[in-house]
Image 1 (tube, one colour):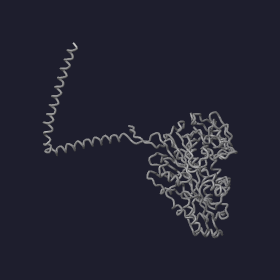
Image 2 (spheres, helix red, strand yellow):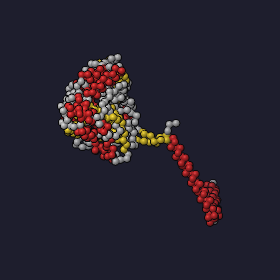
Image 3 (cartoon, rainbow, N blue to C red):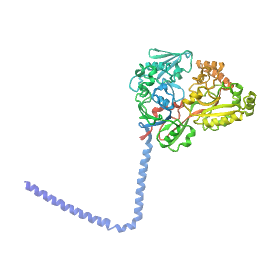
Image 4 (cartoon, rainbow, N blue to C red):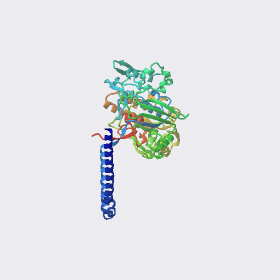
Length: 576
């Protein structure tokens, strides 16, 4: 049986072999007859072949183009989660405790890592942060604050009213010097059920703005004496409530340059940021930042001014200018020997051609008054006397101060040196001698020049804030080494106007009081307005930073939408 199957298999194999051989032979004959033997005839139809070949190429090209076109119509490059954003700042980082933030670097880190009860919103007004509600009584003297639900620290612990009460007590502790001590001076705070009640010593219409205070975790710090806070580990490795939480610090130089690495906080009350991480690279001077931006070592910086644009060599760096609620003024020291008389200060203002002074600026807005329209729009603004050099010279000569030397002081950054040079030239035209001093900004300048009022005229920038509260700059009580009344201005009428305006909840009455203040301010000339400052932000063109629609009050308000900042892109289908 096996032999029979074997023989049959052999016969089938032989048949298949003969069939295959015959098929190969037939194929060779077919190819020879129908292709090889006809190749010489191709010359006769070469044009037709070329036309068919070109037609096929065109059809294939159109098909590929159509495919690409349709792909582009339903997909787009979009920012996606991930990546690291590196921002360059100036100033040392001595502590990560936000109550002690003084340098630009520390303020940036405070904004990124810590949330506040109230905050500046996208519109440039005071809005809600951790607070769910901030409600005044009819007089503006008692304010009730509640917190949002399900707030958490970066370590997962809940953010509570105990944290708020602890922070306020520490902020105003007399044994330490925090940046927020004056916010709660004389304020009584007590807990009522699920709310905190703030009772003020007097009515204050803009108290909500004083609640922009970074909250500290009481579950970490409540047993730490206030005097020991700076020494506690929290100052170098904090638990946070902001968009990012602390990761690590890399020390780069012995002079204080370092990089502070942050990671996205999944417990952030606005939602986890798109960025995986944020790094703050501190520098000792702006020249190093220019180099770092040009070389792509950092993503962005807000430390440079518009005058630095020519120094940036990289075409990949964009410049964005956004007006902030800061004003640049010439502060006239009303207690100096030369400027103590109102008539002399009036003559100085009349003899300064502000159009010429402002000609050194780029796109900054002129500023004539210490109240911004974004703060409150008044119905009547007092008229400022027009420039009249001859009348001003006559008044100065009549006052007997012509030929005497004015001490003019300013700082070395931005437009200040150019503005100071223009002021110097115009003051000399008025008949004064001028001794111009230009200082590097920093603690030494504050201690040796600003606090002792070691100048006749100071060209300087101040924060005007979200509301027109002029107390810190023009109330007589602030004319001290610890205050910010940079003109040493004293006026009982102005003091009354400022206090009346800040204590009324009636908008019409507030406007009337501020208009009264401005009439005295224009007449007494404690300062001369020059321009409203802008934040100049340089950043890599391939990233997404703060929105063009954001209205900034402080420079750090650029982080109001930091949860949407991004550095990574990917192709994504459009939503139908």
